[in-house]
Length: 494
Ligand SMILES: NC(=O)c1ccc[n+]([C@@H]2O[C@H](COP(=O)([O-])OP(=O)(O)OC[C@H]3O[C@@H](n4cnc5c(N)ncnc54)[C@H](O)[C@@H]3O)[C@@H](O)[C@H]2O)c1
Image 1 (spheres, protein in one colour):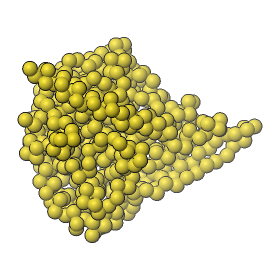
Image 2 (image 1 turned 120 degrees about the vertical axis):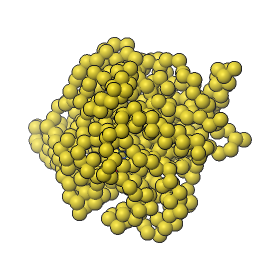
Image 3 (image 1 turned 30 degrees about the vertical axis):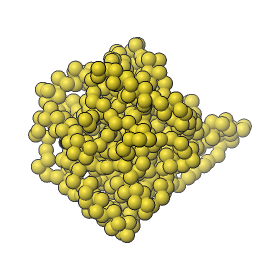
Image 4 (image 1 turned 135 degrees about the vertical axis):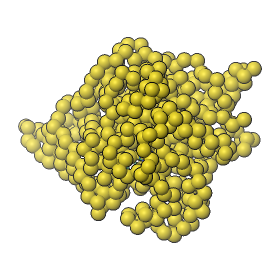
């Protein structure tokens, strides 16, 4: 029988550590996670801090009785893994699907994927050609039309390549269902199809989202489904009492308290309910509410976010440590971004922009260890489409207090930078789930602007942590974990 949330007994946290040691029994401080608790209580300024008693969400209770997975073994048939993209026809999701199919068909090299480098040699990652794509979307389109729009606007998806994977794109478009839009905010509603309003009750939306994912897995006989949130950046969701516990959130959903959620809350809760690995690539703060994390802890699925680190912030996280290692005091770090496309349009709404700015501005005091003047500006320039430009001005002080300046200009294509990262994370999440890892996947911190449950923002340190996780996956002990789980599961079923 095929099973949703197909994983083995949760015996380790997703970073390979013992989950028991991660458990927090004390009040913890709220942080960038939408003003929700940071289990380490170490969130840097300028995030608003708020104390909650947050016991349940980080406890790992006995594993619920979920259906089993087929695990890879040399004699078994190859695994097939679904990738469920919330925001399926967006620029990033479409680039990801076109790229994955091009790699699978041998039409493109896996440029930009860390999981295809020598550092990952010997790790049993799922093959790119075993990935099947589907998802939720709120605009009428399909992968092929979306790819052609990207070609026309950005020139990043060559016509010949798109033509060669056109049949795949048509097939995979059949796996895309109507998304959920509760309390999405005016700008997201303005890009969504008319008539797709919030009238459907929350409980019905949640049930429908779960039904769609379940049907996708069943129909295509997939061993696992990894969920990825690539929807437009939502306006920030204010912390509410209903977010504190799973029981509270369930009650709010049952009484249709629309203001208590955003679409991403519904998507994350659906993945948590189904016990599926979840990657949150956007800065929306409506996902890792204590209540949702409580559900992830119950069903034992690995999860990670927030906000992919692909451009200006990536450079910041690599450069800021240099100033630290030379004891050059940074006085000011001023950054200015201009971008076009739908993402840029959504971010031109101040409500939605706030989520992004907070995400991009947070890491400097954390890396440098002291407060400094910093600012991130973002403006919408339609003609740029997906080609983003960031200009950063760094004012710093050296020996005898002499003041100097460094400036850089980053010109990148957003989706081209982000797509291989998402593919990497899908492969890591699938492997983590297969090996029974649970909870936040802190090994993926290097991919995020606001990595969950870690204060490490220095790219070099994050890379070492990722390498260490990759190395652990190569050991015979890690590979045999899945076998141990099969034994555990068969014992349980008896
Ligand atoms: N380099 C990058 O591309 C990068 C880096 C970090 C974060 N992100 C984030 O990733 C997300 C996607 O970026 P993009 O450039 O593809 O943006 P996009 O606007 O092209 O795509 C977003 C897609 O989500 C869809 N959508 C919106 N609300 C939805 C809902 N409730 N349900 C289902 N679909 C919904 C939109 O219709 C659109 O197709 C954004 O939030 C962006 O901030 C992107």
